Length: 429
Image 1 (cartoon, helix red, strand yellow):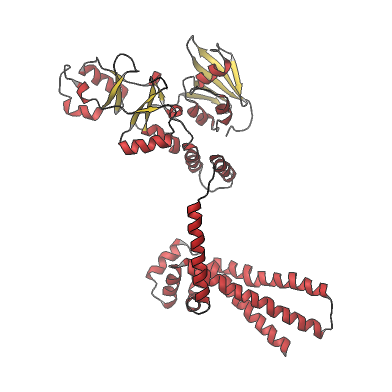
Image 2 (cartoon, helix red, strand yellow; image 1 turned 135 degrees about the vertical axis):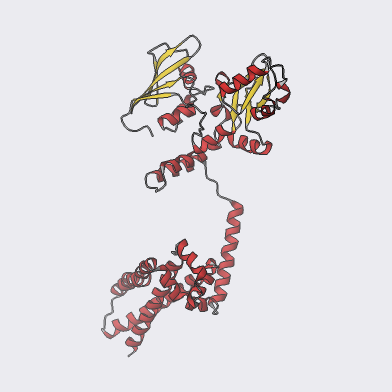
């Protein structure tokens, strides 16, 4: 009779364990659509589910405390029951008892009290949440569960606050490694991964790496008359243009094309230089995340990049900064900013003036091997000259990281065109 009573008690406890475990899976597996539907559900069970979901920490605490109490009771009762059965069968073998205690009881508890109910609850989350909501709501306010629940929630809040203050330091390399590991198995698109990679590398990128070199900047000279300025504005197609006096090193300011709109009917003697706005100068080694903050704070979209000697190296715009995260931004007036030609999967023709950052994008590589050996150069042609020690002639080449850079054309001043050959047969990315 005693064995029967304990067996019945054990079945009841296993059933309760299953019910509570299933509740945990059901409540925290509800979809946004399920939760949205509960707003208009005025039934007793629907209201109870909504009330519990409003305090998820308390709900989880109640479920965990209840489940642990029940599981401890299951272990105690099963031990007593097992002892009685073995005594009645006159079995006095501690090894057998230990094996049953550890393996059999654990297996039953896992299957009946955890795995099977949770699988069922995840497939019928809303229905089961409504079924168990009212009993859980009662249990939520029932001592000693309510006392223990309050202590557990308060304790976890203290730990959470301490963790937030302490913070977690993760290096850029760690983030890049994590992105690389998840790239193959992630359901997110290639474009989303590119944005994430851009965000990770954002704080390590200098202005010099993304600026438009002074050789490629369209600018206005201060001695032009108004008609000549209008003609050049139409030709260039930009909304802002730097204005210089004598040489590009002497930047006077930035001309906003919209400022000229009220004066389009003026003759060529109109003093357009009075509309020039004050320039914003930034050093070459400024990080672009800091530049973005300054653009936002000063409400400007263009900056003049200066080198260590105060000479103008080029210009950088807000669009240049944002493109490092989201990729190329083009409008109906933009031509292809990265000039290259794809011959086949392993061969490209790239202009020597192409920025190294853009070169990496063309080949879909991280460019770490290039960055390790590059010095002050920021263009592909400059990189070749810097590492070769001279301006290579036509058909001469330089190899870096299984990438062969063959000079197609050059002159006495620079490398103009480069053939890029991937020596590896696999994808460069």
